[in-house]
Image (tube, rainbow over all chains, first blue to last red; front, side, top):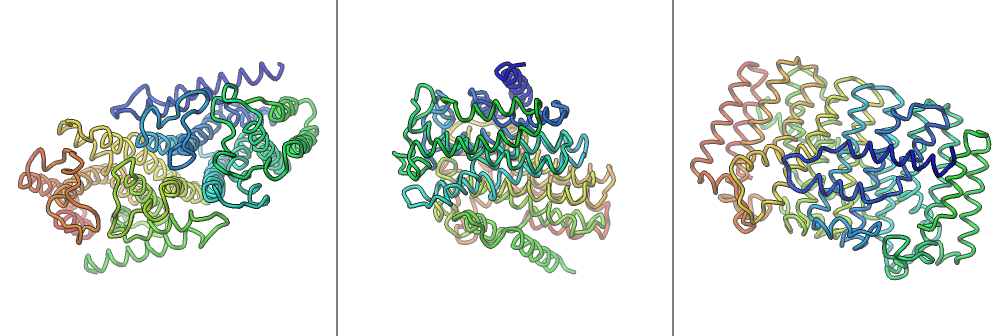
Length: 293
Length: 293
């Protein structure tokens, strides 16, 4: 199957599974609707797709990986809801739609984020309870660590703290690795470890995650400069208006593009080891470099 | 040992354990300090004490229960940080100190809450990884469910939605059971299940949790009317100023006190079955009724 067909099939499976997870409603006002709103707001599903790709690479069972993959998407979604809040990035648009707090108010946006984070862990604990495989527990731990103060939340703190302050390029890379790279890496790791990948392969996957994560963030910075609201579905030129340093402010546009290209080349070199089995991940690496939104 | 000595010893052990959990600092600005600020802001540690008491009741190993008990305290603490935010209850004081967002700003308060919730799950997953006992997994699931949309977050949503709106007394009870009762029940259940309590005993413990949780909430409403800022360390008469219905507005002060007393009597009747082993929990039930803060 070609890359486009492969990823759109995966995306459909992910959307279906996410849709079955939450009840239609419970006896509580607003919350399910607010969670669903952001969860089904047209995300690319990059992280769960990466988990399923890593699972396929090591011939695992995608049905086993799916709940863990979707728990990562829930965590990613909660982080966007909280990032968009007035006290953080104060964004009105996300994926071409009003942000969660614009629709449901700040209080419910905070609670919807909390609820998605909590639900992600409820989901993986349910799977562990049904079948306490060590690989499930390893995946759940990797997800938890990647989402916490040593990962995504930590990166978000660096981001918040250095708004309007000087940051050096090393710390900028650390921030991106924590804020974006950690969860992308955890997605790949989750798919691979549940599929039963060997330790050598898990090391490859970790390295791959770190390369793709950083490349993804650099292309995000590039799109913030070159992209348009129409394609991105969110405000662009934000770093400039928030006075945030990014890769472009350190290296300029051309050098940043060259760095991203080098990272993707290195990622593809790792994947060549897996011959044909790595072809979809190679195509995804190319997509990260050439995407326009 | 008398009740006061017993609980102050437990509280000390809990404070010590909580203190060792977080690193002194990591390479991330503010976050550890903000987490520690609220975690060590003089909480009564009611939930972890209940977990340790239930563990003692069934002759379990408190060292095994401690991480789970403290994960519950972290979840409780995050919920207070988020509840106090301007978009929620907008409180400036908590336990006699400025609230988290007053000290660290709203952005970091949101992140400190997120981080405590995430860390709670990292902690229990670490313990499950070290020893995947079914009882650990059951405790972790109970904590997750009690904290989520069917428990604490759900109760918080009802609370937020019905501010300035009519609520009926059934829904008020549901709200309290979800917002406060669920996590108190989970604390008792966690201690009991890890201690190896039998199914019959776990049912008793669930009933006990629900009774103590509701009684605790009614006495909270009573203290909101009768208490003072000096003793409570937070603003009182809040329900009136926020136009929230509570037990007092439905039943009046005297009837509310009688209801709380009945609940505590029923809780104590369950505990009598355990003879001397239940004495500390009986004393705690009495404390819930007679506390002044």
